[in-house]
Length: 298
Image (tube, rainbow, N blue to C red; front, side, top):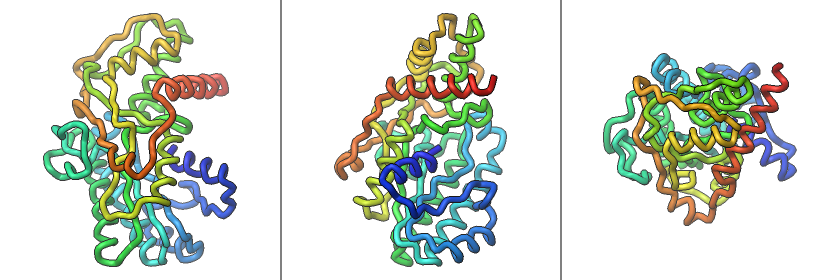
């Protein structure tokens, strides 16, 4: 999702020298394959947007896979970017790296100040390692790399698969399907009290490209809106926009995850970047994209 958004933005800017590979063409977990790619292609700039990602249940069910594959991807790409003299590198973190009981909004200096959220600990540990690898490579080798820490992302190219989707796209699918199929009630995990911050992937892509040009530090930088919303309010908003008129049932036996995840984005703002796509606009766009996808699958 993020990689595709970055490619769209670069093509809009008339970049015609992009070096792209799909997962089937290049498995980033395969060290030899990654080494061969860098040796033959010699990219000048690398943005590592690839990762093994998923929702709460996938993270609970496959923690070893999330830890191993993300560590392998990061280790291979960062080390080869250094070895083959990449001129500028960008690593994408995740807001789940912050402690479970982190003060809000979450500032960059709060990293590693407390225990992680257990439901996605494997993924978070891998992302922390990636942030530190970029930091240490800068320190030891003068590696020109930066790390950005996006909040929850959604939008064009997102997965609507129940096992792989995150909360916003999962809710869009639930309520659009229910409204289209005339279902009277929709069950949503948790209590609805947890709060999350959401940023459209097109805004995130713009932020990444902006920071690649204007940010240079061994400290990672938060990327988001700096505002969050309760999952209950999010679900009600999506239900309304999707035309769902039935009941929302909250399954309190299911985990909420972290109580709150809202980023302090003052450093990003100080650099000169602010997002533009509001949550309401983004939800409406995502609903239309899912409806079109659903129509094409019929």
